[in-house]
Image (cartoon, rainbow, N blue to C red; front, top):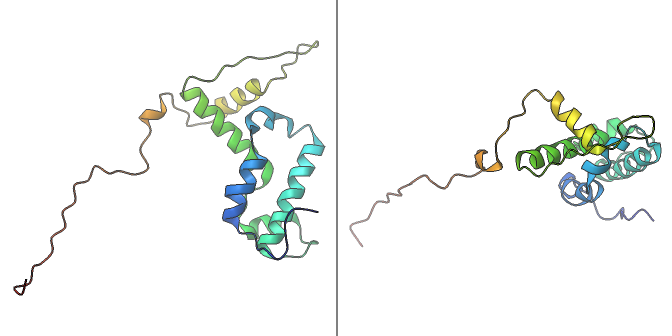
Length: 154
């Protein structure tokens, strides 16, 4: 059983808020393995294809990139890489990033920290600071006044 019931329509919001966080849990640790591990990549693609089919109501013979586009979903490998890089940037800004690199016997670096540091260096707009320096999403500092007319009958 796939766990997705055909009678319950899946919406992109449910996918992005429930399924994707479960798929991408701790992905900053394992995202560097996506390129090398076909099993992991195939598993993620299969789950996203099932979700895309449910969202669009398309045929199973429809190519996955087409279904993803119609469903408004980013390709899963790019989304996982995005989430992992975003997490690493947040950890680095908050001074929680420890860049420990492990090497194998041949001297090749095999670390998620090395992979993500390389990704962060390739970003054009990476600033340092703290998360407290970021712009707030909401601003409650506006002092609004509500003027309402009073009727002479009151």
